[in-house]
Amino acid sequence: MSDDVSRYMKEHNIDFPEAVNALAVERGLHSLPIRYDAMCRAIDAAYEVDEVKDIRDKAIAFEVYARQARNTEAERRACEIRLRAERKAGQLLIGMEKAKGAQGSGSNQHEVRSHDTTAPTLRDLGITKQQSSNWQRLADVPQEQFDAALADATQKPSTAGIIRAADMAPENVPVSAEALWLWGRILDFRRNGMLGREPSDVLLTMTPEMLDDVHTLAPQVVSWLERIGEPL
Figure 1 (spheres, one colour):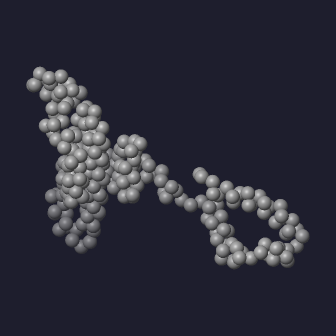
Figure 2: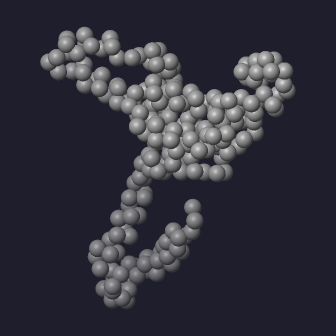
Figure 3: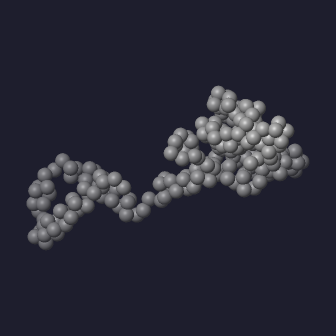
């Protein structure tokens, strides 16, 4: 039970469900689905980290009250707003670090350093180093993959879950030498015009030893190639 709910119960002499619902109304929880698009637009338009963090913190409060009120739709919406805000904060933090790096080089280093004191620190923004790291990693997740995670109705998305899924994505796995070799050999059939020729014409000038190898191995190769179409 949150401190706010406990306080509300004592102040108004009401039980837990009533306190949760009253707080939900007071904090705009029931209007969250209507406000969802507006909050997403505010996140997209924000250009300061503290703006986005304020939206993120409010979304967390909405998420807690929605969970207590057992309003699954509002809880999901609040979760999505929080993740969008964290991703945008990560993008802005990356931009801040790049700007700081650019300012630290060149002929005007002394002049730039005199202005560095005005730049907010993570402590000023109320952000921990771990949050900054996580949000920047969330910002690096491809947009399509991030949107797919939010749209997945089978599970509730999370910062750690989206990052972990991105780290395990197939595009992050280097192509093996065997895969490159097979790709090249299959392309050779097209490049060398083999697909348009009769096998008997190609085999015509082979030696007996070559023909023996072809007749032995070809059925095995065909059987193996047929498995390429099977689901992984």
